[in-house]
Length: 462
Image (cartoon, rainbow, N blue to C red; front, side, top):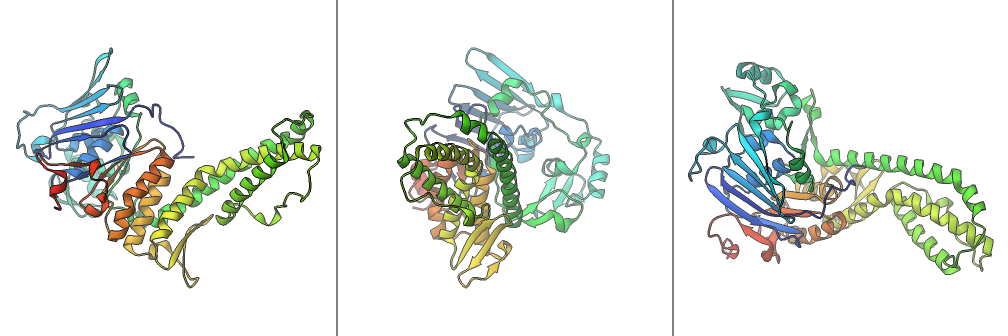
């Protein structure tokens, strides 16, 4: 199931990010000690918090086009094992005050420095596909990409509401373009660089969270509430878990008689106390699965209220071993469902989130069921953000969150990083959070980094 596969080297961690002339002007340094679950970026509007997160995401996902489109001079990423990845823009002088257009260009080089291995270099222009600009512009105009031409090389994005260049159209909507029209690709990047960057799968959560924009010919189908999309996603995940459980159960059931007959001795650990303890624990898991419509607990029989015979102990022990393996197919979902409901329902007023095989349901205090898309924007932000963190971010991910405070009540903002700590424990993930909110930071000022030269952490809201 997606979201469960470990990355190649979770012990290697990102510990420092240095970016020069971001937006053609700002030099930023972010220290991220390996023993911290999260670091918080703050600073005034226009300092480049969002662009910094986008650059980190593009680097780890090897999104060469986005790196090329991002206005910066150089970036350096340092890891706990001493590996250093440098990205340098080519063809520009390293002078302060570059315009954003001057600070972005078609070509850059990646350099990997590792102890005892020398320098490994890759140049982006090696993967450049030449594009006929008039042909590309004509294709964009005739396609279903949600942009409108303003002038040559400039487009109005009808989804995001901003003006973007042709290269940014390619970056945002390359899934709607034929591959032959996409300018930069990650072909040919040395294995050592891809292996380094695979040590942390990056998951970027952007500010625009409530509408899901997916490829498709029909605009109504393409723009769907994210909360509805995530509801369908949970239903799909539950179906996948049920299918896996069915396969595991069939294999165990087929071999049950053979294993039972081959186990003639009663092992010392098979005691009545151990059997009843395991049975009670498994009954609790069954109860939780019943709550999300996975199991029907009506047929469950209690253990006899008497001393068990030796043969009964042996049969029950094998049965409990099999049941434990069967129930383990749901453990990934159960852990996350429990934390999702705990966090979300602690925020909702007079309503409760319920999850079952149909997805999300919201039930009011009067028993009325409402669609998740009928929740307030703040409630949707809370549900979407928490679900995304728990279910869509892979284990051992580096998770980047831009302005989590959007639409959230002040009291909810104060609890956000406490929730992050709990999610980090279940997902083994690390977080970089960009915010304007002192309520989000709350008691965690020691984890903050101010993105402006000479900028003191406490000075913004003192």
